[in-house]
Amino acid sequence: MIRLTPGEKTFVAANYTMLTLLTLLIVTPIWYVVVVSFTPYDIFSDRNGMILFPESISMEYYSFLLKKGSLIYQAYGNTLRNTAGGVLLALVLTATAAYALAEKKLPGRRFLILIFVFTMLFRGGLIPTYLTVKQLGLLNTDYVLILVMAFSAFNMIIMKTFFEGIPESLRESAAIDGASEYRVLWQIVLPLSLPVIASIGLLYLVVYWNDFFNALLYITDWNKAPVQLVLRTIVANSSLPPELLETAGTTPPPTVGIQMAAIVIVALPMMIVYPFIQKYFEQGMLIGSVKG
Image (cartoon, rainbow, N blue to C red):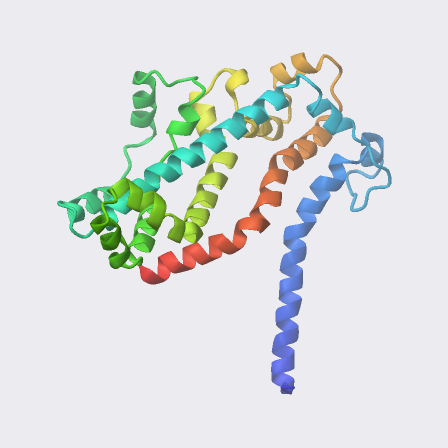
């Protein structure tokens, strides 16, 4: 057993204290949101919002938001569709581009990489992007939020760097046996690249799930809006979208409780999924950065 000097003990104690305080700073707001979402409004009002532990449990806010036929239901479905379709499309585009650029014999490879890097440093801007989307007839469509974020040059470069670390002899052996480039990619390269695929997939997953800004720009029909746009309207405007009130058909509960419940409803899936794929995320990002 290693004995610590008084100075080392003080250092360790200070570290634990700081980490505990940081943990409390992070966890306390989350805990407060959850507690308020389950607290009846009369108790919340009597205590002037100073609640750390629920005295009684009420599902009033969740019942209102998740009532059958509610706007939240459709918005949740839109978000799930956008996230699933967007992540799948983004991974396909990223993997194929990364595989092509990982081939050192590709003609014009340096120039193509330079073009992708250039897009990371300089963008066309918001107005040109909006005009392009409008001219393509994508405004207010079901798939505009899938296409507008379907590729990231940064993620592609990370995946390319990982692909370059795979022994070239594996691809050459497959090519000698008559395998096409697509077969080499799908049956050899991708199965060996699960860590980086999981990490890039997680990045795309978070981007698609949390996006509300693009919906604010390109979506005007609430039936096509993602749940994040509904949450943004509830939290930022301190009011409910008219469409949510119409579908509810009843007098809404106090807004503060609905705000907290909406935050929990939107954040919960990511909080559940992330711990299961965190190890792949860390491993993939580490490998990509070291080999880069």
